[in-house]
Length: 119
Image (cartoon, rainbow, N blue to C red; front, side, top):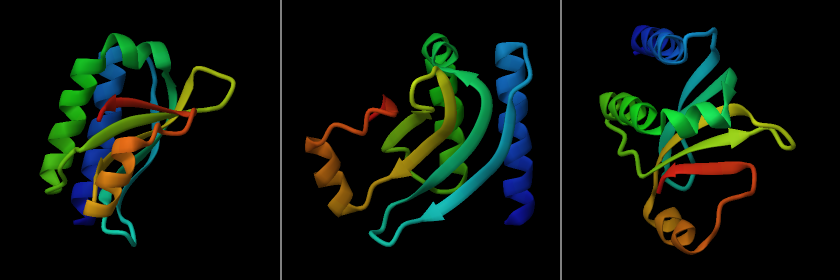
């Protein structure tokens, strides 16, 4: 499993570099399970901006959905976290909701530092 995670971290970094034509740094890619039952992927990134995601949204969504599927994770919610007061994206998240969170998030607006790409 660790070899797959290492390979996928490198692959997603190369994907963004090729897509944007500049250096993007993926310092970490985590596969997580929350206490509530949600599971997902969290990617820590530097060099990615809100405009990049808006312009290439469909290609990015396709890549993240493909990545999630390879870990048997349903991409219920795909989002980015922005550094407050800037256009810098610092995290990319893919989450499969548990039953509790699926209901809770249905009626709540995410935090202001989160931009939903798919919900």
